[in-house]
Each structure stands twice: as C-alpha cells, then as structure tokens.
Image 1 (tube, helix red, strand yellow):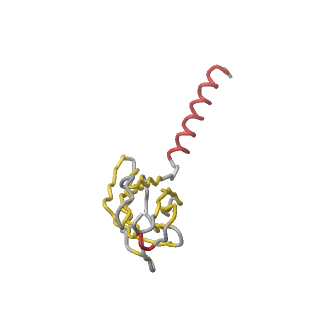
Image 2 (cartoon, rainbow, N blue to C red):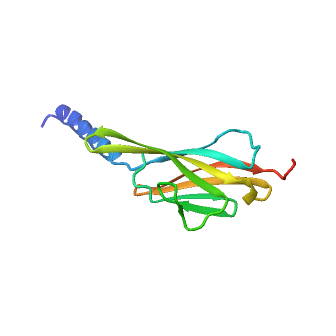
Image 3 (tube, rainbow, N blue to C red):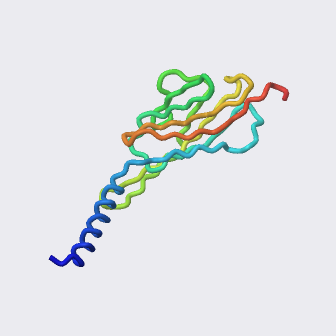
Length: 146
C-alpha cells in the first residue's frame, strides 16, 4: 500500500469529521447593552439580542434581590415587580439543508424605584433546547436628588 496516497485521504477524512462535529454545535449567544450611558430618569432600558436561538423556554432576569422569569414572547411567568420584558422582533434565517437560525430582540426595562440606591448587575439568562447562555450589564441607582 502506498503511504503517500493514504496520508491525504486520512487528512481529508479528519477535516470532514471535524466539520460535521462543528456543524452540529448548538451554541447561541446573548448580547445585553444599555440604551445609553445616561442614568437619568425613573426607568433604565437595556436591549438584548439572542442570536441563533431555538425554542426559548425561559428568560430569567436578575437585578439585586429581584428575579423575574419570562417566556419567549416576553410574558411574565409567575410574579415580577420592577422589571419588564418586551419582545421587539423575531427573525428566522434559512440556510438550506434544514438549517435555520432565529434571532430575537428584546427590550428590558428596570424601574429604579424598585431598588435601593447602589450598584447592581443586571443578568439576562436565556434557556433553550440548546442549553443556557447569559450576559450582564452594570447599573447604578442614585438616591433621589443626587
């Protein structure tokens, strides 16, 4: 058997296997951004994008002692005070070969009156049939008149 013909075949097979494994990865991402650096006003707004997400089963938003859960449409699951979630858009991309990608955009609104003055981290965590992914952003609540 000629080894010079075997090596390229093995390399080709390894590349094909790597592409098949990489193509079946189920990763999705979350990107959370404040609307602006300005913290004036009673409500703080953040925009978030879920990229390449499928079947969102739960969205959890935590800030301070507040934890709220929402469905894919932005409806509250259970009780929630001080945080709102509004679904802005849902886009489906079809790449052919049965591969589709969904991107969701949401607006998160935090009512600063629900929090005492201080520094907080807002955590946005999405759960899908692909697993979970999250992102966070810092926010500061100042005392009235400051």
